[in-house]
Amino acid sequence: MMQIEITILIAVVGCFVGLAGWLSGRDKKIANDSKWRGGVDAKLDTILGIKNDVEKLDCKVDDHEHRITAVEQSAKQAHYRITEHIEKDR
Image (cartoon, rainbow, N blue to C red):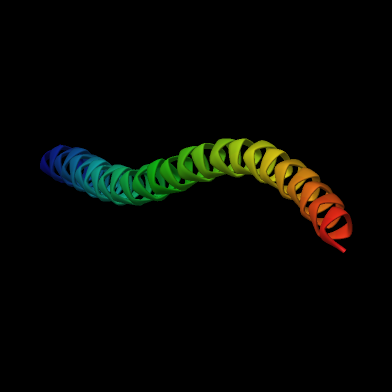
């Protein structure tokens, strides 16, 4: 009878030790996953910030494109007027 009680006690202690090991491993895995996700989130935030900066630069380039076109047209007209003025002086 005493042997059965000791066997049951050993089995119960073994179950608790196994459960404690499983819980400890699970907690470590969760902590590692959280650290990894935090790193990934930080990198994604950086990428999104860069994307926003690129979009702002794209808008500025579009604005400059329109302004440069207007300046080119104005310079073209000025060249025509200068040419006409030079021909009149001859």
